[in-house]
Length: 545
Image (cartoon, rainbow, N blue to C red; front, side, top):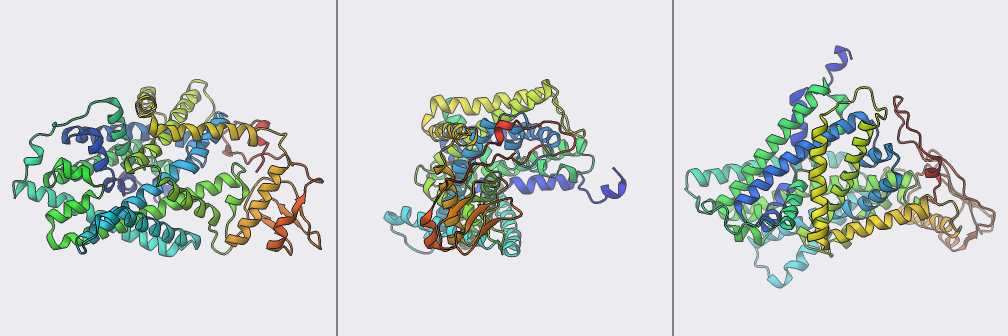
């Protein structure tokens, strides 16, 4: 690699700041109350935050080896597919689309509703009987607003807004830390820190739920996986940047929590997830009215980025034939996957009714960490079977992989036996994913009605959302019984969809499949790197969608 190229790459400090900026987000303003409810005391909650930082460091080092070894988009999905565990990859893709992403979106929108209510309560007297209704109203209003933004791919507006959200994030964190330490050192507010271990909980189920909350706040430590090639001397700088970046984030998170405890007692913190708003109301006087809205801006930015990534993940899965073709539909003018955006929004609204914030975090994190077990095992299989990977892969000591795998297994297994109610949904969806894989993906003897339904829903989506499908698999020709016998044809993504003189009335006449047979085609290979020699099995190319 020449020096000219290196001049345009990030060094240690650039990579470290990238890690810090990506991790610090809405989580620190959402999960402190959840962690305290699960841990019971100030002391245990602080230990949980430290433990989450250590787990994040171990995980980031493992994922750096994965990211530099397997240079493919798709993260966990691509890593699991690399060892040809296609049913497992499909099942967890299914869980991510139906639960993990929607639950994350629901958590952020619900928290936005709580913070907005706390801000309004400082100005207006709100009847407590209407608080839950108002929270849902604010949450859903925000979701619909962000959905509309993503419908039109307002990239310029979104980019500028993300700058504002980042500024709000930095100001909020700095204000809380400075204010808390001011009241501790200059006002002598220390009574809440005197008995740090009172009412501590040590049962494994509660502790794992507390770790789920902390690890949700640390999400984003795998960011360098997506840009290792843009860093100078990655074998040296990437591990150091991760280590230093996560340590800085941990210090900021712990400082914010200590600031909370300086001003608020344990019972007050447990009572509301909008803890920053309560903190500001007690310490910042008149200025406290602005804090909930400042954090609301931050949450809006976080919600926008999560809906963007969730919808694109769903779109990418549909484009490769793993989901119905309607979810691959994009608007030609804005290139927005409108059907996927709409689906993620509706799923988030629905999942917000099945549990409180603590449960939603648990739903999200259980699926997330269950997938990581298989990702880590796949990495160990690659190491022990010496499966060829990229020549410039960054290798980590095996003990790091084993340590992270043990922690991951503990985080997944304990809730199954002690907090089954929060794992049941993930297990059910994962099981359905396996069934759907063998029925709809692996099978090559499907009733033709499935192809008819796929084309019908795709055409409806095209009309309702003003979009065209973008699929890489070929599905059967479906004849529309119109006067001119025009044809609806799903073809390669470059040709989009051929729709000739169709109208909504013709949708009801999609019946003639007698002339059609499924066309078997190979799924686009995830392993396109010239140094990879893994070849997909032919069985995985049998697609329904």
